[in-house]
Structures are given as C-alpha cells and as structure tokens.
Amino acid sequence: MSPEEIRALRSELGLSQRQFADALKIDVARVRAWESDEEFPTKAWCDAMEKLRANPPPKVPKKGATPMQVLADPKFFALMRKLLAHPKLRAETEKLAGDYPDPAEG
Image 1 (tube, helix red, strand yellow):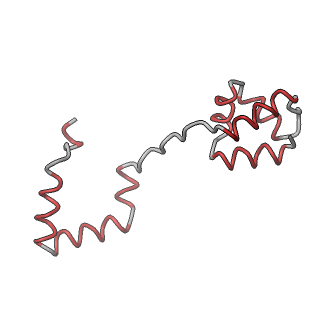
Image 2: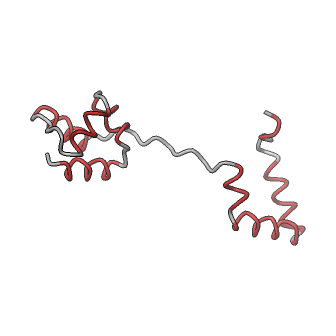
C-alpha cells in the first residue's frame, strides 16, 4: 500500500493515526512512517489493513461541545430568546428538563 492509500483508508474509516495504530496493535510512529513514505508496510501489514477495511473498529463517539463552545454558539442565544419570549415553549421545556439531572449538581 502506498502512503496515499493508507491515508485514504484511515480517512474512509474515520480514524486518527493513533486510532489506526491502536486498531492494528502497532506504535503510531510506524503509521506515521508509512504515511510519510519513510517505511513500507509488509504484505502482512497490508493484509491486516485490508481486514480492518472489511471489519472496521467501532467509532468512538466525539465528545460534546464544552460549555464555553455552547455559549459562543449563536444558535444557543436564539434558543434562549425563544424560551424567554414564548411562555408556552418555556413551560414545555421546563417539563421536559425535569427528566434530566442538573449538571451543576454533580
């Protein structure tokens, strides 16, 4: 596999270099070397990468936005304006929010 093919496979699988290395049970430095054309994967590693393509590892969910990112989002303020301006929407939201824990309490 060429460096471009390895990068394309990683992209197809949605994996970082570290995640790709972990899936192959190798050091990330080896993946970097393959992708920078400093080393060439052996046939055994090429076969392992093709197996990975056929049976990709489960996707790791991305972490949600941080509180500061939420506050910086203009959509957040549009939502707050709607909640403040429409009593019925606010009441429905308060009822729905009752089913969820308060993040400030734990």
